[in-house]
Image 1 (cartoon, each protein chain N blue to C red):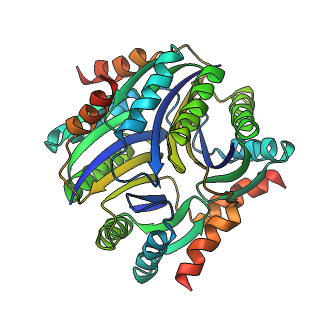
Image 2 (image 1 turned 90 degrees about the vertical axis):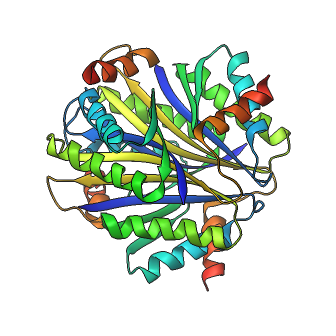
Length: 99
Length: 99
Length: 99
Length: 99
């Protein structure tokens, strides 16, 4: 089962600046060779369910190891059986309606 | 790694009434023997990361099998290393501040 | 326009324990006389769009005034035009499918 | 109070393809002259709280008028008092850690 995800990880208890933790999570996604694209309030990820979920778990593990005692993530998760849809397909179908 | 989750599954393409799909997901959680509590806009779940995530995957699989071609879930996901915290602990600590 | 909301406010930069901030937000909802029900990972709210949104804004303002320099909230927001649905209706329609 | 938002609107009861509704919401944001950037699973928005929230309400109203009987949106909402932060600042601070 393929999944399109939007992942937003919020480390708690490490002060107001959290960018180094977000950067560590980006490295996890890159090392997992998962297609991903960061935006201002999260990261879009595309891949097989198990691989994407393994990366999310590793993000939590790595950020805890860096010293964050608490993490609250918000995840949006899309699956579909009617057709195979990539990140690019999804954006394109809206842009075609806007043209 | 233990996780506290809030899971909200939205089936798309099956009309405006989605309660039978939500009910199917409740059955998945029950069969998985996961501690869970439904509220008006999702379900709180407590358990080991892998077991909770396996149940989320099964919810998507079961709802697709029921005929929903598309699902968009929103998940909140909390982990912490400083202490073990249950669903009840979390609510109690707010209620104590309100008393 | 009526709205059913699930509100989860996460204060950042105030350490690992955030329950006093959540409690302050509960007080805002109570003072606004909005129907609301706290759960383990957020608070369900029912009311008119403008009143509910005014309360969300006040939660952010109050929590900042308490000293939290940064807040990241996750909100789920449901509106419908086909029928009037309360918090209780929504839970009941799932429970009927489970019975 | 300035806000950085990630808005994801899901129309329910209009079939599996929802891109025309998302496009309508993009037009609302453009007409409101709000800084915004669509990604694969939502749209980042930056602006004053009241203006951004007015646009979110208008998105719901417009999508209902187009015929969608039900909408479930997921919103992430960030405010901070320690400093003024733009969408670009937020991405840049992560990218600097990755460099």
